[in-house]
Amino acid sequence: MLKLIKKIKKDISKHIDLNDLKNMRKVDIIKWHFGIGLYIRNKYLYKKPKNIKILSEYYHTTVVDTISDKILLDIVATLD
Figure 1 (cartoon, rainbow, N blue to C red):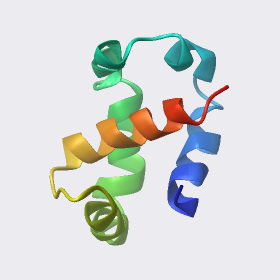
Figure 2: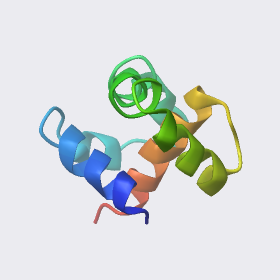
Figure 3: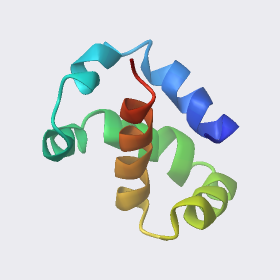
């Protein structure tokens, strides 16, 4: 996992209980698109174009909404 994604995980854990994500089905994570997903897009993507470049290469997409969804899915994958 990229250092940037680990940083985002640590940051959002201050705002939400990651166990809420852990217990969701993959399709239900979309419900977080306008909540924590928007937070990720605003803080880590739109304000930092360099992060968009790094994550676009990592996730093979330039769609910022998709990148934030994939970040959430990666974070969920690391929860045990």
